[in-house]
Length: 246
Length: 212
Image (cartoon, rainbow over all chains, first blue to last red; front, top):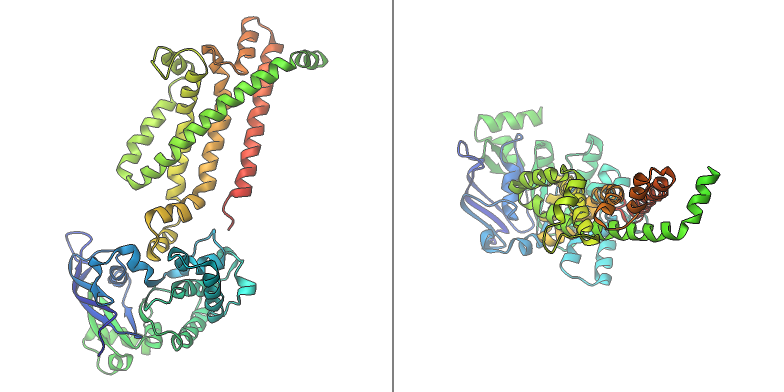
């Protein structure tokens, strides 16, 4: 196996003294791979995601990104190399769709022509033709459209790692399903590694190459969806998976 | 009424000159208060521990009766004395609180998800402030400046008591001579000035505010 893009080695994170939020957390995401972190709310999955781009710092263990410890990399530069998608896209409400998509290229100092070319291409990829959507503002978009802009923004600078935190969480079930299908279609076109955080096991099973099931700060089992279905490691995973299968 | 109009018309040169002085007092003090209040308000959002004591102190200062503050400032070296400079210092003190408080509240009112997105895509703190927080807080900050300006127009009439000029001169003269027409000659233009400045700043808010 080639060296992972993102690697957690025995990571611990405490917010307070009583109980760690993450404990003995080890996980790798290889180049081009989609790994889903799934589990009930409060299980530490978002905390794990935020350790990757140094929005949080670990209290123990190491997080390595692009082969180097994250702690040794300048946070701003690191974040510009990592795509970041949150619920509702976290779009800047006072910027147009185009300005949002061009945010990272602009921070990186790309020329206006190159930015424009890139934002046209990204908007086309996510099914929002620039002619109709580029000048609009987030408030005038539907939830699904906002989410697409969020994805386009995250991918605009062609990062080799993308972090997605409940990217489709704010959508109704039908829009959610449509976005999941599109995600799989986009996936064939980008070779980025994706760490996807979701509380929805169905979403994790549909979108990810490997799924890590978490409970109270620990990974209970990691594997391809089939393996989790066939050989759940413990009662928690069996029950969690069976709820989805039912 | 005709009598009043004629009275005002007869004194139009003096009223215009004093309105100009008044405008200068208010504009200069609002500009200084903005230059101090906005950066300080931003700084308080970065140092939450300081926000309560500093805002509390500004609140307390605001509670000093204005005539007393003008009086207190007269013997103070450099800042004080008789005249417009002292009045501007006092007006800055009063204008500071609304601007400071609104800047602080405006920055804090930016949605956490938007701030997280700004950090997550790799903005520096300066970029986040300049590109995201200040533009989104702008309407709230401007509302604070509007309050400061409108209140400042009223307060500046009292500045005439320490020889700072402005429309208060007519009001004081009117009070001293029990001439209500003179009082109105100062009060009406002051009210009109307050409304006009409020309207102008409202236009600024609409023209340069963030569109959503």
